[in-house]
Image (cartoon, rainbow over all chains, first blue to last red; front, side, top):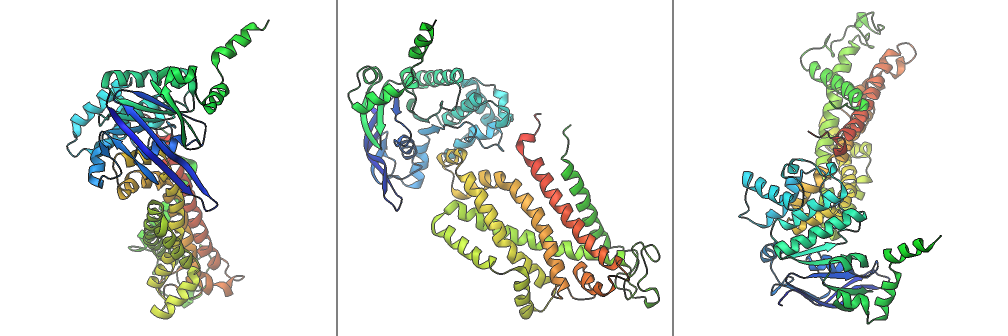
Length: 266
Length: 272
């Protein structure tokens, strides 16, 4: 398999005056086309900085990100805009990621700004409608405002927005963490379904091991900005090679374990 | 049907009456606001005219109406122009950060150090007292007020994920400011506009009271207050009329600001 995304020796340091925080420290990772790669780690492990840097929202201190043979940090503004069609992002908080004053249609069509030849008027409406149906909503929902939707529905809208430029890479930063369990499951199923139908690769950033088990082909474990371990999901979860991964897995409350305990009580 | 906030209705009615009186005074007043009549001086309300007459026999209602034009005109022009400039500074500081933000905030601090009365005295020395002096003095004071409010509100919007989404859509700072930042801080700006216009009216009255506002014979609430001080016990209506006009106008604008804030909250918007 060819790699779609290559993160090469990426570092991002923040100088706080009192000392330097290494949010990312020499991280190298690759993501194959059509693969779902999970990035896990506790709060402050650098996983969100990784997402922001891969999205070119932030510049790395050193190292680079290569997407489809293009080094995104050496592109000029015009070329970067063109490249941005290929990578889009879904955020954690479905309440903060949609402008409350814009109608859904305008929100979903926003990334079309990257495409000078994007459809306008009725054609654009039809495109947005198709996308809404693609993520399980109604085409007519494009005339409504974000506050009329639930958290799960908003996350579907955010996914539709990320899909409008037909990206090859979708970065989901804790995209299901703010949702309750049943809705979380629906959104995960939707992401897997989109992967199968459109061949999108997904970089799934989460602190939830259960979610990783559910959808990721491979998983990367991060701690203090460093990559601790990376491998196929089942191998890493069943036989973690690193002490930190073992601790992280042990700290995760397992539903099956809790269930067994409560059932054993008289 | 949705119900309008009570504050908006009350504030709106007061503001519309004041603006209406100001506009009407350009075409019609019960009597000439500058026409003296020594024979009918210091008449009580109802005796001559609805609000009586002043120390040289001018009709008080006519002066109040013409004074509304002076006050509202100067205060709203100064607030709109000064507020507009301040808003531009504020969104620029929030969007660019770094040295742009430091420069804007330092400039703000310097402007803020000059209260409108002091700038009016300085300007008065340069330009002489008058409407333009009052407008510039009040307007200059509005720049840092709006720059601060705008910057603080805009910084919060810049931290939102929908702004990050807009950046991923390749949008530049200016476009993001126009499409995402300003619409989401407009409610705060409208509230400020109404409240600061109220404060502008107070400042204008203060300047006129000190003799640095519009020159006589142009009617002015502030000057009327200062001129009628000596008649406080013999003709209290001469002090009460401009005093109440100022208080009611400022109250109306504050209520209007609060009501507009409630109304523009998108959570109140009904589904169609």
